[in-house]
Length: 316
Ligand code: SIN
Image (cartoon, rainbow, N blue to C red; front, side, top):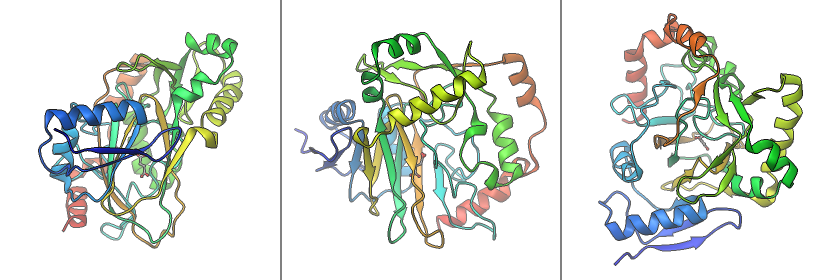
C-alpha cells in the first residue's frame, strides 16, 4: 500500500506530497496516488528529495515521454537532452542562457507545435531569499468568465509567438535569433479541454500575439484582459523554494512565472524536465515556417560542443 501523504498548500492549486522517495522506482499504487493528486491539485511539491539529472529523468518518465528540448537547445544537460538547466551561473565567463528564463506568465513550450504536458523542476541551489515561482489555475480563469466571453473564446484560436518571451533579447542576439528561427509562430485553441479531467481551461498567456480573424490592435486588449484576469491572486499559489524540492505542474491547465525576486549575485540553479504534450498545434504559416527553420543556424548554435563542456562544469 502507498505511504504517500498529500497536504494541500493552496486553495487554487498546490499540494505537498510526502512519504515518498522519488529517486526510487515507483509502485503502481504510488503512481496512481500521484496522478490522482496531480489532477486535483495541479502543482505537486515533493520536498526533501535527493536527485541528479538521471534520477529526475527516471522519475518524470513515469508520467510519459519527455521532451528533448530540440526547440530550445540552450543549456541542455551535456549528456541528457531531456534535462534543461535553469541557472544563473556563469559558464566560460559568460552569463547563462537561461538566467532570466520564465519571467512572464506562460505555459511551457506553448510557442511550439507540441506544448509540454507537465514540467518538473528540481531545486539544487537557491538564493538566500526569493527566486520564487508562481502558478495560476486556468480552469478557474475560464470558469469565472462571463457566458458571453466563454462563447467568444470557445471557437477562437490564438497565435503563440516565442518573440514574446520576456527578456529573450537580453540573452544576446545569437540566442534570441536562434530561438526565433527554431520557433515560428504557432496556433492553438484559446480554450483547451483537459484530456484527463474533461474540464475546460483558458489557454492564453503573455506569449500570445493575436487571435485568428482579429487584427493585432483588436487582439491586444483582449489578450491583456485575459492575462490579467487569469493571474488574480485568488487563482494563484506561490512556491518558496527549498533545496531538494521537486515541483511538478500541469501545463494544460496552469500558467506560471519565475518571479525573479532575488539578488542576481546569488546562485539559483534548477534542473528541469518537460513531458511531451499529448496535443499538436499547427504553424501559422507552414511554408514560411519551413523556410525559416531551414535557414542557417545562429553561430552559437553551430558550436554545441563548447556549450556542452560549459554546462558539464556546472555539474562537477
Ligand atoms: C519555467 O518557466 O519552466 C521555470 C520556472 C522557474 O525557474 O521558476
